[in-house]
Length: 252
Length: 252
Image 1 (cartoon, rainbow over the protein chains, first blue to last red):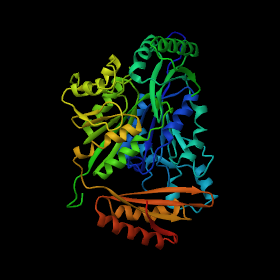
Image 2: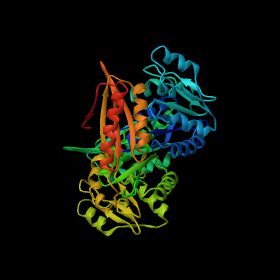
Image 3: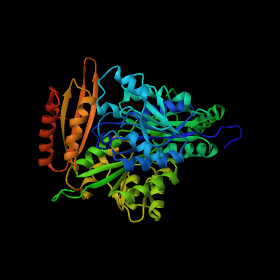
Image 4: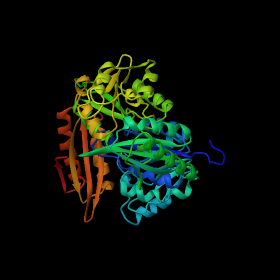
């Protein structure tokens, strides 16, 4: 770690739901969470997708919450029998669930309190609520874990009550250099040379192929804006020195 | 397990790449792989997304390949320095990489063999090639692991050379009952009753909210078509008995 840099702060995303693993529903939450946390100086370092099976959720949650600074879960907090995220989080932390009076009151104002709906009022002991500005009951947080809805528009709403609770590090920034008309086979050597000169940064190559066009977007990510700027200059110079003409930084 | 049913055959998907974890690129491969494997009688039971860090890839791969019947990896097989999937797979299996003569010959016919391009010819000892019908070098398979490209159109092409190598179980089938105008709070009890009566099946509720419309799609999944049909009938009857009028099976 270069002197003066803050330590990296990390998170894992735990996506809970058979419907994602079956391919019936495509997850979009990981990308939204990663972008949101990135702005708050927290890097998503791993993601897992697990089925609606309590032992599997507990094991994944315990593995992730001990390894990363934060864990964000999505899914499994509705009223039906397959919504077992609260049970799994309580089991992982070794605490009981209780019906949170604020949630009961909130729901009572709107609906008849069926046993199924009461399930959504359950929060682990020691947990705090995460505001749901969209629809339905809130999420909750306990320890370093945030438990959010799976429905994307509700998840995005709840996320707005997460950022201010995070202790982020320096924000990871990225800049993109676009190469057109050259493949990765010729890009690789100059790219690797610049990557080796900047071990604190992450340099990646993301090729594109379109009818009549091909090339690669080279993404430079790091936490020190001055170092990123220097690396962008070095990369463009190294690519041109390797005979690659069509190179330019783009907004990405 | 009900008598006469075949054992469930499982797979994990390991998505490799910083660009997915940063939110810059949205993964679409998990859903495509799950749908493809489902047709071949293989259920995706877990998915992980990991960064371009060799120790992390090795650890995840070893955890997944010992736990599930198959592992499909995507990403990290290009020519650049951050493409380290082959290295990680070889390390996980404790074997060396070698340059596969068929790949070298294939590439030599098209390009100059730069050191970067030679990286793409590396296959672990004991591995077999997976045909790439789209563009660029093939993937490979070793043990119960299939190593595919990350670019979706290439990944989908390679997948066509995977199915015939799988020993699948009974294909999981699903049927969907749509409820309109009733929320999960009233659906939950009849749904749970039917789920309890069919412990070999998976019943899930996936609510939808649109302007002026709301309800839930209830998905019944299982491996015995006769049992699924019975459960669909029981669920519709139970929902109607609970006073829910707008209920019908849909194509989904």
